[in-house]
Amino acid sequence: MATQAKVSFKPLGNRVVIQPSEEDEQVSAGGIYIPDTAKEKPQDGTVVAVGPGRLTDDGNRVPMELAVGDAVVYSKYAGTEYKEGEIEYLVLREDDILFKK
Image 1 (spheres, one colour):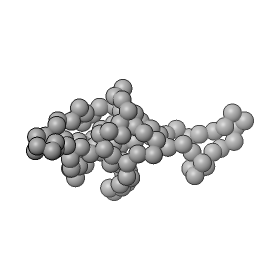
Image 2: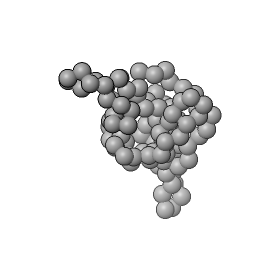
Image 3: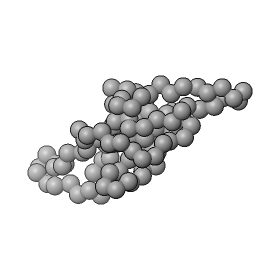
Image 4: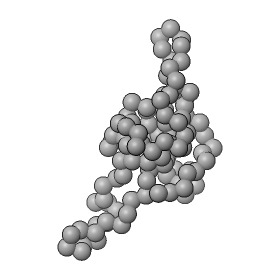
């Protein structure tokens, strides 16, 4: 797994920044190399930043259930990709995270 990076930005509301796990080079059972365009994206990663939590209608803040360093699994097509330098992150809502490992 990749080393945990420190991000220079802070997510807002109930958003979470994930550093997806690095995927291994994929080869089919017959030994054929699978190109990047045909590979499955990883659905797990490490939380590197969390927002303060969402606000309720009456103005109270609901704290996040996640913390920096948590290993999580998230929905397949969730979030927005963001690249800072050479590192790619995924910014998504807390609701898109399925479970902690």
